[in-house]
Image (cartoon, rainbow, N blue to C red):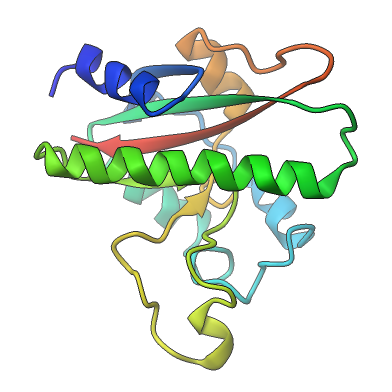
Length: 179
């Protein structure tokens, strides 16, 4: 599948911006793992897609760089209050739902890969990890950009995608990693 086709599919699924990058050029910074450890999302240690269970920063980096390219995805949301956790959670859920729809479509077009989300996996609530059960959807689960220790601002600058979209707007980012 060409880069233009990947970007076109992303736009058709509702993403505000998309760009393809070689995975070898994705900037990683292991110091971002601390954001997961702060557990502001409440998923640290209780979700298969989140640390510590998802893997070390090095393991996560290897998972991405084992593939050739990544389709970087952005959604933009109007928000009147940056402390409105309910609105932010709904926007992230919509972003990730679009990424999963895109992944299903791309896999159907013989472009296998995996999603990197705007937050940790929310396919099951609670995650099967809480009950000591195996993941119910191992092929669909996704980890967030922080779990992968991706330096998102630097990545978006490389791709020509705005990181800060301006007052009253909130951007979320993710990726579809493929060959």
